[in-house]
Image 1: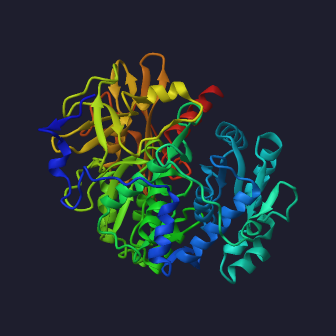
Image 2 (image 1 turned 45 degrees about the vertical axis):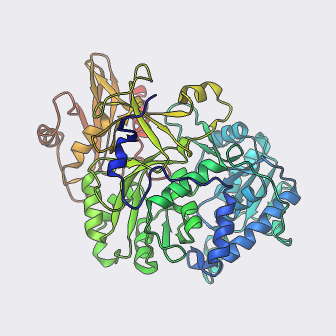
Image 3 (image 1 turned 90 degrees about the horizontal axis):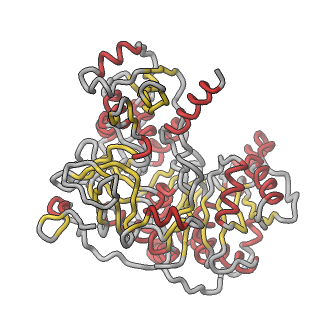
Length: 567
């Protein structure tokens, strides 16, 4: 491939933020070095606030050291896989860095996984140990995994140990039925027992460029999820790139709101690891709850709030939004799904913050592009490549020929954050990583004359109806222009006559009503006839979402096809 350039530099360099160098050196080092540096610099500063109970960075650092030694004493060897099957909580941060310090590899698990999904990921990743909480929701699944998979030990974290007084007492009194009753299996080991040491783990030599820090499984929107193997250098590079992008961060002084799940690669980098790198206090919820989130912002005054578009939209539409002070927010990064322009504008008007839309994927640790925190944010754009990152648009048929500026093709990425490979998937690795490390994303995009990148849609989500290409995102953007729309998903459904038809599922804002004819009349001014959905279904309940809060096109299509097969 040949990069699209003006003179000898990529086209976006001429429009890059003045405070950032696109060709800056990206340091290479092990992930756990980030925490050790922050403990040295900001050990006395707040590190983690979980439902009112707080830890300082020095306390987190000590717990990480002791957990690492405990793992080694338990028998953990370099490169051995340890799963994290946890909600957002301090255990996640401590275990993540302790595993890496001990020389292990982290495997992130979604706590809502079904048993079939857990079985696949444990076997595919070769996970021998799992860290989880003593909540029946999780231990019931772990019991089954110990019986059915290679899993050898489960490290059990006491949920009430991390709750402040009197919440710890009240939880046992009123929700004690949710807690695992004791160590009922020999394979269980209390987290607190692994901490009974001097915190002096044996040094493990890490080769940052080749040693795997994290195995991050893709969302599995098509086929079986694949494990992206991210090296220590991949993970730290993306944190360094993100830190360069948010160059106004006041290290050791500011606060980060963590409602996105840490097991997801977006939150792992932009919430957890970014906070570690910059010494920010993480204010975390075990899972996103709208009212609780608003109360936290009002009370705790965080400065950073990474989220997905549906969270910003939910806040915009909260009936009592004026009761909360959200003006502490400075910068919000939106990812995981396209950010509707109206959602961004309304949230910024309400809070006074800057919402920066970015783009990434599991295979790139994840951030590839972002809009600048100052200067032009182009509507509908994912911004420009982060420092050290090259992007190219290539022909979707031959996967090689560069497309001219402004023309659509497949987005390809190269940079220090791009994964090593998929675990156990040489064929898929070869198809995805080509030509010396170019990551083929499967996304249709174009680059404008200033170097801003625009995602059009996923290649696999393209709808072909009567031989014409229809991009679901383009139709969704038009639907969102209607002020009464809260959520929408557009997808193609099989049709004997046309190949596929366009269908839209829409949830209106509370108290609003509309007919399919009304919406089609509205869309007539914004879309071609072929793009206007032939079917429109209005729903009163929220549309299906993934664990991170992205609207799930996969789930709604499966639901629709399931209904038809049952007819």
